[in-house]
Length: 229
Image (cartoon, rainbow, N blue to C red; front, side):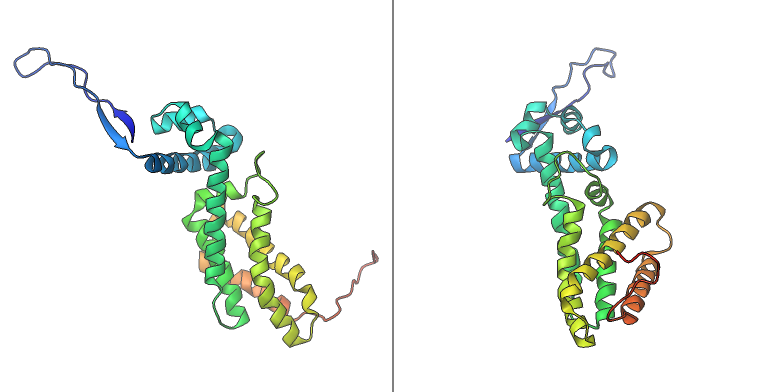
């Protein structure tokens, strides 16, 4: 069990004018698992607000009411804590998107994907702010770009079937999946700050662009400008 001290009154006078004895600090006992979750929650808020570079182990420890060695004991340092926070947020977003892609018309599936991402931005704003930031500890498997790629992989299968049904080359599905998911993600970054128009309207416009663009696809698109390579 781990302890955290909560300060009580240290002195004063009682009703008879006599001096009160200082109260002893109460200590709330916290398990190792509870402490870990507390540090993750505090780290998440600070990383979202200040970024990786702007957040220090000292500040995380101070907010938790513990010493720096406690943070190192649980995560090995700021990098370790950040990596766990990012991993959790990536799984939260990916699970939300993949879980939203249920059976239905292809256009409805696009709506479900758009809503899933916008839902995450709305409900897990701190997490999204962390994911879209770059940091020195972000690896090729732990960046927002890699997360978008993972989500696009889920969309590939849907587009592949649609392409095949329409007579297009299904091998191009990955390219279009990246383009579609990337456009939604970038729009989401913009919407994160402006929050206008409403979420449903944003989703409708995203799907409008994506669907009608797909609906009018040329089987062999050509360039009309002077540049050909």
